[in-house]
Image (tube, rainbow, N blue to C red; front, top):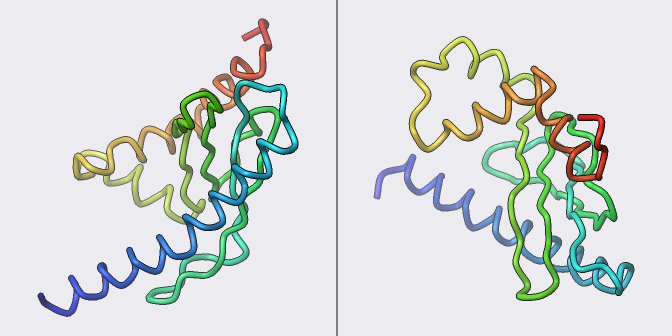
Length: 139
């Protein structure tokens, strides 16, 4: 394993150590806060950017409604029955947008979905998706 692979492995482990416990805690809080709801949303806010190789802490919050899309955000829909979650979007920090847009033809297949979220954020389609998920029939 070369140094770059070691770094990526370390970052992955650190991300899981920070991500999973906070995410699971937000789900527990959502189940308690919204006991009669078949689903709710879980979104994050970042205390700080990812600073290689140390990953700073994310905070996850259960929400009754799908939030307005903002940069540097992940949103999941959690369905209580079956304990299933679905990624609604992940939007990177704004300073990543230009690189993805300028090099869109070179984006690897694994990151095409991320590019789509960036485009959707910029063209307003993620906002329309949020509105639809929240029952706004004007969309």
